[in-house]
Every structure is written in structure tokens, then in C-alpha cells.
Image (cartoon, rainbow, N blue to C red; front, side, top):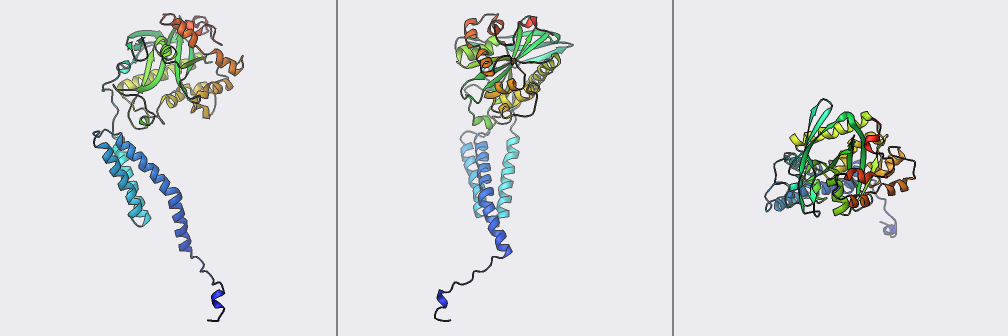
Length: 356
């Protein structure tokens, strides 16, 4: 070694191809695989916590599974073996989760105890258990039901109701079908809650509620929201051919009968009031999927742009005039409630006067 050799930079070895692959796999592992595995671990832990295990056992089981899943990723070598064990454990949890069945036999809250169903005879349909609660407040009410027959050939209108209860980006959606003689049949897709339950968005992802289609008098569904909850209800008359109106109504009734016989889980992401009503009202949107079908607080803009409602007024003015809260509060429990809340609304004539 010469006296100055220590100050001369030594050449660095060129990384071999296997070393490069290992480095890339390491980056891939920490930037993609680990975040995905953490999210899946969070899901399976919460799924176990909200499962049908005893309440004292579910938190401990959730913690144990989460620790086992993450430990497999940390301590098992090589990485493919760790990932294989993690995937097998996750698949085991998913299979068990899918075995948890929905039910129509629970201790239901009184407003959703009785399910509606439809009986067909030619062009006539009889709806059993139409709800019409007598409200004294949002939580103090008497549950009433009645049966009514409708002639499908006398179906004259369909109205979209957007209920704004908080965020301007999300609304509850209902559909109401008008028959000759100012008779209306209103549908609201909701959670079927048990006694003691309140709605939680987080719990809505984890099989805590069954799905239900409430079929009710508008004095029930609309008045509850305008007069007792203080929510904003807008009613838009949808443009539709007689055939389209009939097909959409029959789609609702098929879903009602299906849930009467075969319960389904509500899911805040995949099976809720937004996703289920989307398939019913999609024919009215006249086009491809739009982000406002998901953030349905803006659905009024979409149906206006696509000509599914009266467009003789500017859209902001149409929206303002479709608000029915004042009319609903004035109408109260009047048997003529449905007609009174529609008087003067854009695009709406008395149902009896509309063309078939």
C-alpha cells in the first residue's frame, strides 16, 4: 500500500441482479403489502368484535387474531411464507364471517316489527302492512298498518324525495308512486333496528342491521322527517313513461317480497339506501354512472342535467320551490296530506289530471 492509498476512493461493488431484486421486493413489501395487511387486520379484528360471539369474548378474540396476523408477518421467514399464513388466517375469518346469517326473527323496534308484502292478481296489487304511524314526537308514536289495493293501470306518477339531514353531500332517498285519485305509496330503504339499537356508520359495515324496505303512507315517512326530525324534504316529479313507472314500482315490490321471505344484511358500503335505490332509479338518470349517484346529496343536480325533472326553471330555483317542509307542517295528519304538500310544486299537476 502506497502512502496516499488511504485517501483514494475505493470502487464500490456493483449490486448483483439478485441483490437488486431483494431491494425492490423490500420496498414493495413495506410500501404496499404492509399497508394492505394492516387494513385487512383492522377489518378482521372489527369483524370479530362485532360478530355473534358472546360480548365478553369478542374483544379478546379480535385482539388475539390481530396479534397472530401481525406476528406472522413480522416473525415468519421467508416473506412469502409469512404472507401465505396471513392470507390463510384472513380467509378463515372471511369464511366464518360469511356464515353469519341475517334473520327476520329478532326483537325488533316497533316501527319495523311488521314487514310489508305484495300480492298480485292480474293488473291489481294488494300491499299488506302499509305503515302509518301516529306521531306525538320522533320517539313517541303509535304504530298503525293497513292494506290497500292498487290498479297498476292507474299508476300516474313517480316522485323522488331527497331528505337532507346533515351533510349537504349525503341525502336519504325515497320514492313515492302516485295513483289516480291522489293515492300515494311511498318507499324508504332503511336499516331494520332491534330494540335498543341506534344507527352507527361503523357498525353498518359489520352485519349489525338487517335491510328493510319500509312501505308507508306519506303522512308517516314525510311527516316524520319534516315535522318531528327537522330534516329538509324535497319532492321532485320525475319524467317517466307509463311503462317505466310500472317497471320501477314492480322492482320495488319484488324487493319487498324478497326481504319478507329471505332477509338480507344492510351494509353501509354495498347495500344501503343509496346503493339499493340506485338500481331502482337508474332508468331516470338516462346515462352512465356519475359521482352524484354515490354522493346523492347532489342527485338533484344530476336529474336536472339529464332532463329527468322539470327544467323550465333554473336548477337552484327548482330546488328551492321543491322544499315541502312548510306545507307538511301545515297539513299535519290531514288525510289529504299528499295532495296538500304538492300544491304548487314545479312540474306537478293533480295526479288525477295527469296523462296515463
